[in-house]
Length: 309
Image (cartoon, rainbow, N blue to C red):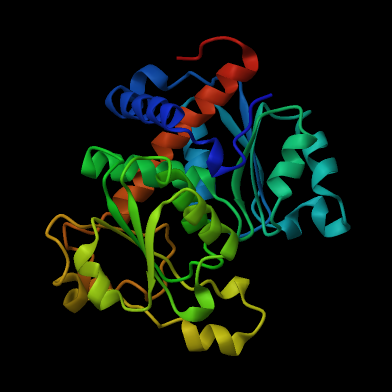
């Protein structure tokens, strides 16, 4: 059984195949409108979500399939104490493929180990978010025409930001990429990621100064400070407005900078820059639907041993 649990599984060859498939779906949507007819996607979302859940559901519906699931833990048997392992065993009886989001790190792996259907990690705590990474890679590829030789700035919550962790893993697999990690001291990347980058001789610098470092970036990946990851409300309030991208800062950047954000944003990107052609976060959300369509097709195809394309 093939699953997608960790961004480390997104090898460049596989990413290239999925991007090519997604681009084909964009060009010829009618040819894919019934590829998953009769198949069911289960969306098991123990945490709130807008883009990820709806893009998965939209992706499956766009392929002619159906969707079942829940959008909060309170509306599932988790509220009664049911384990993830038992939930996925049950869901495997009703669906052909599953996307799961859970606040606890490692929960998607537990689901995959107990599942009779392909499992897609739609975010597990502060750990990984591989389908957002696919979305990010497709966005960067579409704008920059390659995934190598880029200076990638990541700004905000780098400690709990699972999208950041996954993107670093993925972009480190491409040649000559470097990273500028912008965060306050309390929200720096976890040490295990820093050690991995050092071990692989990945070029990176850590700074607290976005205004200075934005001039060097080809891509700027902004993130919100995540209130739900803090145990102390005072710490959240103190850090939440550390970085705000506005017209003044954006004026210092390269003319071909790509400003990305996994969304939702709070106030870390001012709405005054939404009309700047360098901001691509809503386009990024659009790409998420098509790359998930490609992924669903691929996993179902491998599971069923036949071609759906």
